[in-house]
Length: 150
Image (cartoon, helix red, strand yellow):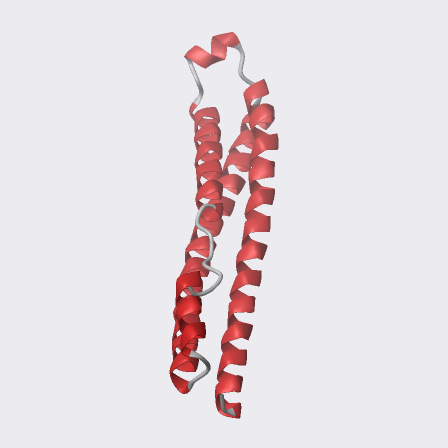
């Protein structure tokens, strides 16, 4: 493997680490929002009485709906995982071939495919997380507004 190829592999490895860190950060923040949703649900639900369940007010219904949507978006944010590398069968095949420019090229191509897939995964997680944050804030605002009116 040439110095140039070493640098290419090192750069792809750096990008994979960066993608992994981004996904972990988003997962942590999404988990915190799921916790906030879990705290908000009892607060909003405590406002319900047997008589108000039958005639649920629009603001409270909106808050509960937003909390449900936020929880679903949090789950979608955390659901798919990242692939960590080429398949074991591919690595075994490449090892049996031995170190060559061809195996180096195959490994590099596999890493680049992982970077592309990881970048797409980060974009999807960011979109779900932003929607989750927006619906959580909406639910909390509606819940506080409902509580202040009572």
